[in-house]
Image 1 (cartoon, one colour):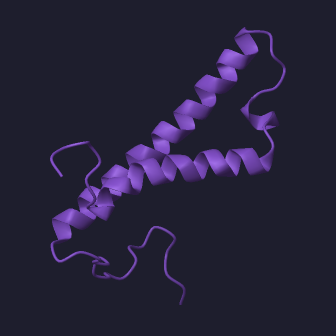
Image 2: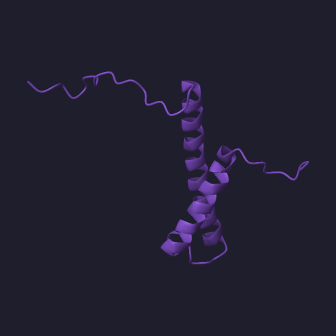
Image 3: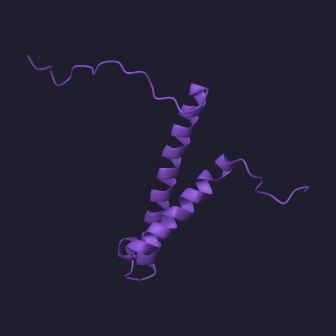
Amino acid sequence: MPDAPDAMPPYRPEQQLFSDPVIDRLMAVTMTLAAEVYILRERIGDLESRLAGDDSSASGTPAGERSAQAAAFAAHVLGPLLGEQQSRGPQ
């Protein structure tokens, strides 16, 4: 007999990538917020283009350029994970 559509799926433990599960959850929240920021940036850019009377919106941007922008944003967001000094401090 098939399960009811509203039946709870079987319990599966959370996937853990870091030694502390709290760090995993913080990373998940950070990545979710970063995705939202990226989407909002695209939408604002599209709206600004339309308000300026420019017909080329974010959706009209070539795929290669959008991919490069996405890669640059991801590198900026994930850069701190490398543990390298970002500021010009003492050598």
